[in-house]
Length: 517
Ligand code: FAD
Image 1 (cartoon, rainbow, N blue to C red):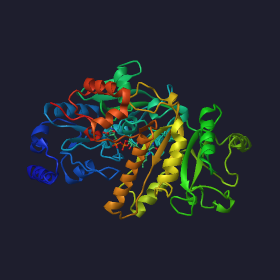
Image 2: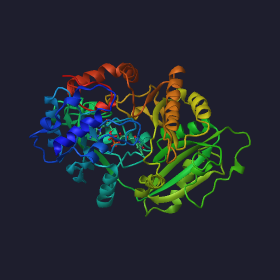
Image 3: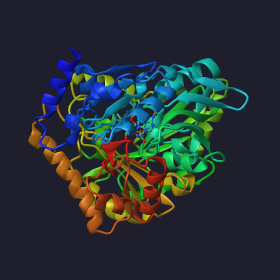
Image 4: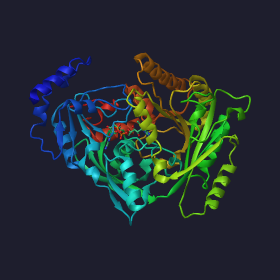
C-alpha cells in the first residue's frame, strides 16, 4: 500500500520539467527504522500542505512531511537526510511565505507548527521571558502570556498566525520595531538544530556565532526548536489613531519625528492609499469604525493621485485617568501636520489591537481571496531615496493601488544588530515598503502574471535609479542576485553556511545553495 503511494507520488513528480536525481530516492528505504516520537506522513493531504504556501505562486512536492514531537525528532530527521547524498530538509512554519521558501523539492518538510513541544509555553515571571517552541504561533504566545500572566512580548508582526521560528528567520517587523527593534532583537536564547544534526543552545554569550547567524538567517543554518523571548507588562488598552496627509514629505517627516523622539506613541506605521472612492484602495480604507466617514470635500483642491495615512497607537491602563490619556494623545498629535478634518480613533483592548488583522483574514477567507495567489513584495528603502521612491513608484507605477494595503513606515537601523544575517540598507532611517496584493476570487493566470511583472518592474526601477534598498523576505533565483542582495555580507553568509550546514541540507526553498554530497 505505502509502496503504491510512493510510486504514485514519483509518477506525479514525473510531470515536473526539471530533471532531478531524487526521483530515484526510495523514501521508505531512507526513512526506514527512523525512530521518531512524532510521525512521518506520505499522504496526499500532507504532501499537498508541504507543497503550498500563502503566495500560491510556487509548488514543490516533498517526499514526506514529518510531524516532530520535539527537537530530538528534528535531530534524527536531519541526521538521516545527511546519510543520503541528495535529500534536503525544510522547516515549514505556517507556510506564510510567498515564494516557496518553506518547500523542499523531493525532500523532507518538517511541519514545525504541529510540533507537540509547541504546547509548552513557559513563562518566567521573575526574569520576564517566555520559552516557546519554534513552531508556536505568535497568536498563541500572545494569548498565553497576556491572559495567564499579564505579560507580553515587546515586538510584533501585524498578523500573528505566523510561527516564532518563521519570523525570527527573517526579522519580524511591525509598528513597535522603531522602539524595540524587530522580533529578532527581543530574543535572548535559541535552541537550534544545525545542518550537521546537532542540537545546540545559543545566545549572545554562548555559541554566539550560531545565535547571530540564525537570526534573520532565512532558515539556512539551523532549525529553531525553542526561543527565549523577552516580556514586558501588557497594557490593558490601546488608543488607535489614523491621520491623513496629502503631501508625502509631511507624512514622512512626521513619521520620522515620531520614531526618533523618546516621547512618542507605542506603535507607528503608515500606508499609502488612492485618492478615490475605490472600496479597497481608496478613502474607505482609512476610517477605523463603521460610524466614521471620510469626507473628500475637505481635501485640499490640488492634490495628487495618492494620499498617505499615518497610523499610531498609545498604550494605557484601565485605571489611568482618561483626561491624562487624552492629554498625552493631543500632545503627541499636536506636533504633526496632518489634514485636520481627517483624524480617526478608537479604543480597544491590547489583545484586540494586536489581533486586528483577524477580521481581515476572516473576510478574505469568506470571499475566497485568502486562498488565491498573493504576489506580495516587501522591501526596505533608505530614507535618502524614499522621496524619489514615492514619486517614481508610489505616484507613478502604483498610482491606481494594488487591491490591498501598501504599507510604508520608517525604522531605525540602530535597533538592528549587524551580527544578524539579515541584509539592510545603509541609512540609519529606512522605510519598510510592503505591497500586500490581493486578487479577486477567480484570477486568471495573466492577472497574476501582471502583478508579478509589476513587482519586477519596481525592483528593476530601484536598481536602475541606484536606490539603496534590500528585499525583506527576499526571493531570488540566481547566485548573482543573492550576492547582490547580501553585498559585502555575502562572504560571511557563505562561511556561516559552510560552518553550520556544510552539506547544504537546510531550507532549499530559499534557492541560495544547492545540496552537495
Ligand atoms: P514559513 O513561511 O513556513 O517559513 C519561512 C522560512 O523560514 C522558510 O525558509 C522556512 O524553511 C524557515 N523556517 C520556518 N520555521 C523555521 C524554524 N523553526 N527554524 C528555522 N527556519 C524556519 N512579516 C513581518 O515581519 N511583519 C508582518 O507584519 C507580517 N505580516 C504578515 C501577514 C501575512 C498575512 C503573511 C502571509 C505574512 C506576513 N509576514 C509578516 C511575513 C512572515 O513574517 C513570513 O512569511 C515568515 O516567513 C513567517 O511565516 P511562517 O511562520 O509561516 O514561516
